[in-house]
Length: 141
Image (cartoon, rainbow, N blue to C red; front, side, top):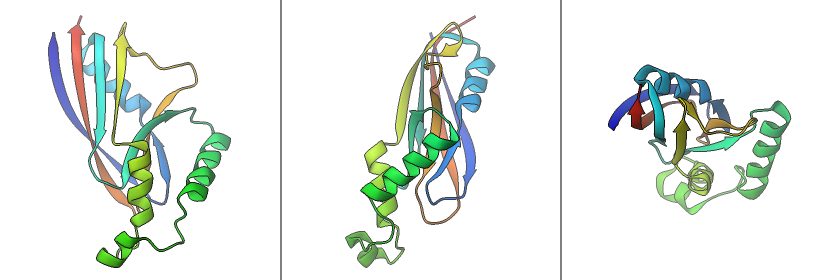
């Protein structure tokens, strides 16, 4: 059993930017030759999140519209009054999805569904460089 930790960076444009990171996660699994175990992914920062979704353009637009309807970016939030950065909506959206995922690995592949990808969601109101911590726990070849 081994535990490996990697840090990845991802440039985002903010404003509900959705970035498919599935390939980068698979690359880390391949690099460490993990055959069976668990990968955890964590994004640091309180205005970004991780989830899985089918990375299909129509569904991505549906998700963006849903998030905007649920937590509108155009209204005032108490957080904005305190800090003046007008990104209270970003924090709420990120807390709804959460900062981490855990995915089982079998035969060197994350056990994702056929149409399921891992995506980074950046809800902030400006471009960012996001840091992702990837922990690989498992058995290698």
